[in-house]
Image 1: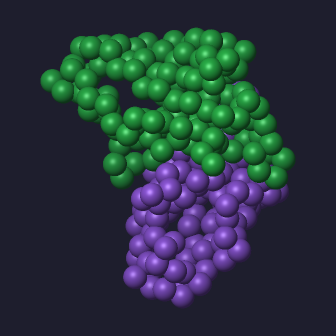
Image 2: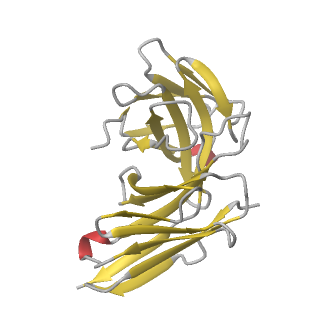
Length: 115
Length: 117
């Protein structure tokens, strides 16, 4: 158990809908990262928050957004869902702002299926 | 353009023998490298890491070697056990990958290791 929790574990929804994925980092970790794993793309970085502030953005679609709350949990919002958004979404956390020696620990993931 | 490459999608090894998983990278700004193990329907589990100032790091049965001049790293598992059967991901961080942050990880596509009893 990495100490990172994610809810829900599974989510099935329809095209055009909006969903929210939740992540609670390990105790003491200030950074939260979101990654997407689809069948043919591997693990792709979406976005990072550090102590409540957006720190870096990867290949995140404009339909997707995230935030980190004062208690450091984070939510990833996915809207106007398309079939191609079906994937595993992982959250990771680390102590600092990333970089040398700052290991990321991953949650169990949320499997999103868009029908 | 893939910055981290794992060229072997799969590897099969006999129990008790050595497993060697390879990873190549192209970005010379990477300064921290990690290996994760992943079982189906679970999140990646951190195994071992190495910083760019070292060329070897050991943790029990796992050893990671870094060859900076060749931009190559490898994970050795000795002895291999059936419970090691999983997908192994190589990841790297450092430099200015996205938006000025050095933190986000760039992953290879993984190597599926099968350890046969």
